[in-house]
Length: 171
Image 1 (tube, rainbow, N blue to C red):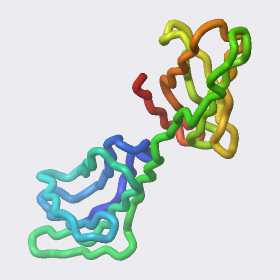
Image 2: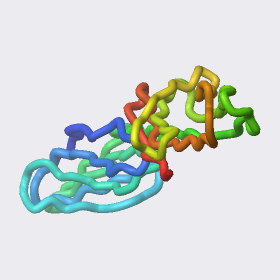
Image 3: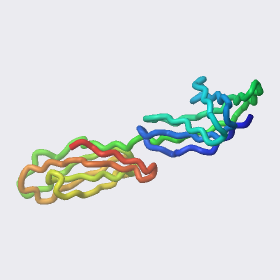
Image 4: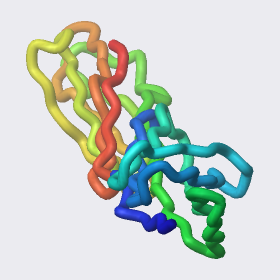
């Protein structure tokens, strides 16, 4: 009996479903571990690709094949593994502002979050949006020029372009 990896669906963003694909002999029993802990046995009914599904992943996950058994014959494996990389979701938040400001002065909002992430925000309740990129230390300043009334900054989403992960923020 034989079992080999056919890949996985990584890299992923935290909270997504991870999939490992194993090509296996039919009517066999595959034993594997996840992140070094004994985990499970799967039994494909016919030869082909077996899918191992892991919902809501938050960290990297490594599936290691331990053995395959068919009709009393056992093939053991050592060092045969596949790793799913899971990137954390980006973050963004408002850490302060220059309140109070006089009418006609600039209102400033100070943001922090994932370095180099793009933050989509609104100052008019979501009617129109703008974006700002956090610097490599994860900070940015949003300036509303010539503020004539109270200004509320709403963060709508944040995207980490390097990891291709994004998060919708609650307004």
